[in-house]
Image (cartoon, rainbow, N blue to C red; front, side):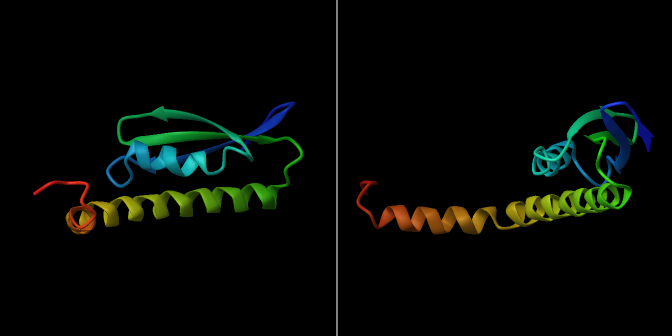
Length: 105
């Protein structure tokens, strides 16, 4: 971790073969109220620089980093489940709308 006058800068990295950029961005957005981010794509890594308030303690920063990592995993699993259940959701919605009279036979 490096520190500046107004904020701490903390670097996290994620393997591009494991986590897509969209997944990482969705996870980071959930923490936009606590810090800001720079995202940089490297060859096989997505590097995220967190800019946290200067008065944030080390334990709080560590906790934030852990929560961000967990959220990236959570978002990735949500994407996987969404893809795996897309056909079922489409079928359920089609059936629901076919019974409303909104779609003519």
